[in-house]
Image (cartoon, rainbow, N blue to C red; front, side):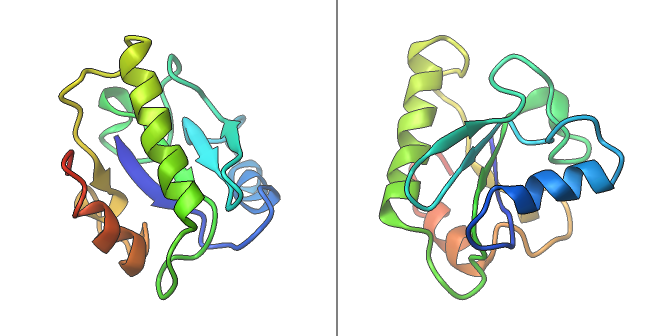
Length: 126
């Protein structure tokens, strides 16, 4: 599972607009998580995403909405991401030994932001 950030604060419209302007017919992420903990389903558990070149067919992509270069995601965003991962395991959509990575672990990018990246590196699944 690869974690991303939207590089935009607030509205879900920014990542959706980006995906449509680049010619994609759907948002590339499996799920997006807003600052208040709301989960937005993109491609969901069962459709291959378009979030991490070379890794889309072997993993999910979660996007936390916000710019996390210098600030942290909300605690509720982090808790929701963890709960969503647990939900995936309980529904048989994720293996119990899943691995979490930041987008920058897969390709050259600043995503998911320095602050979020440092947080996920402390998670046991990293």
